Length: 232
Image (cartoon, rainbow, N blue to C red; front, side, top):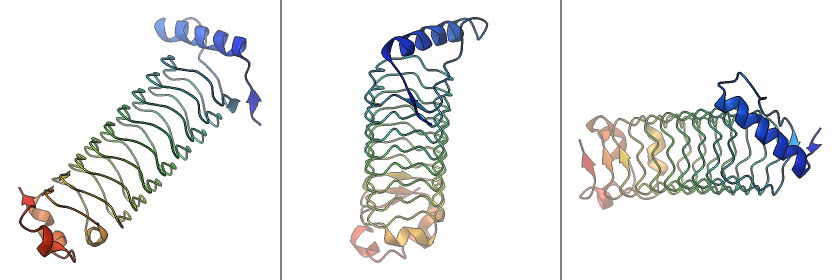
């Protein structure tokens, strides 16, 4: 059941949570916004570090520059939400709906996005080092200039995604759907993939490890990109 949240109650919850965070969990109270209705809420710069927002409705909410590190956002509806520059390190976003969300320049290092819906999401310039994106829906997502160092993208749906200039060094792409993916000038050194690579759309000026040679040269357009590709 989604709980309607009025402005005064939310303000009190945020104030108590701030005390809880700043006192090292000794005073105040952790924000419990389980299944809360926060549609269109203005939470710009809010400190929700470690808060419980599981199942919350945050559709079209403005969380720009908010601190959501280690927050529980599992199953939350963040579709269309504004999360530009937000801090989501270590956040639990399992099966969260982030479709059409703006996560540009957000910090999602170590976040768990397993099974999350990120269709058409803007993740340009975001950092996702060590993030778990296994089984995530990233169709048509913008991941240009994103840092995905060591990220788990196994069995993720990346059909039509833009990974231009993305850093995928050490990323796990086994079983990922890569149809129509753009990897122009991306860094895939140490990345793990096999036959999945054959469905990639563009990979000019992309960097690979030498161990990837057997899979890269199997691409139907290998001869077209051979001169620009670099193996290290």
